[in-house]
Amino acid sequence: MFKYMDFGADTALNRLVVAGSHDAGITEGNSHAKTQELGIMGQCVCGARVFDLRIAAFEEGEKLVYRAYHADGILKSKKSSDIGDGVKKGGTVTKLRPGGAAGLMLTTILTDAREFVSATGEFVILKFDKCSNWKVIAESCCTVLDDRLYTRGGNINLKKQGEVGGSVIVTFTSDGLTDLDVNWINDAGLVTGGKPNGVPAILGIKNLYKSQGNGYLEKYHGVQYYGKGGVTRDDWIKNKPKMNVEKQSELVRSAKANCDPDVMGMVYVTTTGALDSIKERDKESWKQKRILPIFEMCSLEAREVIDSRLPKNVSRGSHASGPLLKSCIPNIIMIDFVDPDRCKKIYSLNMASSTELSEWAKGENYRGNWQGIYERV
Image 1 (cartoon, rainbow, N blue to C red):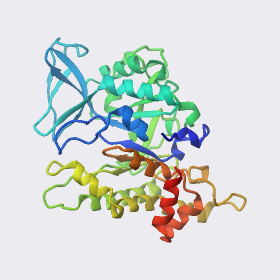
Image 2 (cartoon, rainbow, N blue to C red):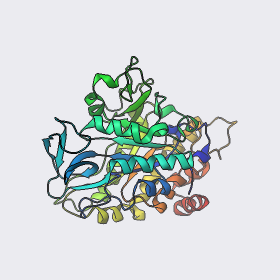
Image 3 (cartoon, helix red, strand yellow):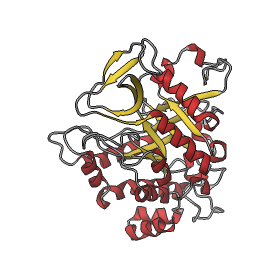
Image 4 (cartoon, helix red, strand yellow):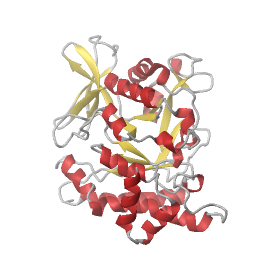
């Protein structure tokens, strides 16, 4: 297993390229819903560090169980009674429409994340989005993660690995933060573990895409990124993987033009849709003609920085994760069906020296150069 900590405790998170798991908890369901084969521990061991999670409550017998979900269209929800554990009166119970799927249990997800960071000293970021019963999710995170929950607050983009290593960073989108009551907010305005003066427990995660990159805050408590996921149209669109490469390329160019250098770039090697198999689309996305342009985006950005900003006293062989190049490479590459080979390809982008990336961008022996870097991991 490779470790991101090998790049040094002083390396900021926005200087790394890491694999992210899209719909990380959906290990079950039909071909239109299932997005992962491995559980969270298996995905962590492969190399994923950012996990996209949607959690809802489901009635299973006489109990309410919190699971990851994948839904086609809008969730069918109803207010719960006092049955089961965890959801009190007024909570929301979910029933999926046909084609949806319920996946891993929340407690299993959290336990795997805790055990992984405890054993390795690596970091993990959990991104909760489009969930129901946010307070229950927050309580579970605090209880299950316990002393492995990251509680220092601050701008995660700028945090160094040594500051977050061995921790699970829990982030909620604005909907989730707003849904927590005042008992979760301390005097500094941070979301705590349910105690008014407690330590920060739940951080925010903010996508700057809709604001065209504006709105970056140096003192924001959480993660700030720029990106947008896969092509969604079905029917007459027969080559969604190709369209996604074009879409992601445009997003990277837009981020470069509009975003603060410290914003994290997020690229999706994913396509969505209800009319065909996710796995078949995914295989097409990882063919050489589709995946190489993703890496080429990284190399083109790196070469521009090298040519325009590299001081004469700095070696051209310095690593891509060095301070000069922190803003020129997408930081999080979201993928379906996390496996060791894919994560190794993404990890290898941190191994490329400036010179090698420049050669990629020129198109000279492109495949050979990339293969050499990949084999060094």
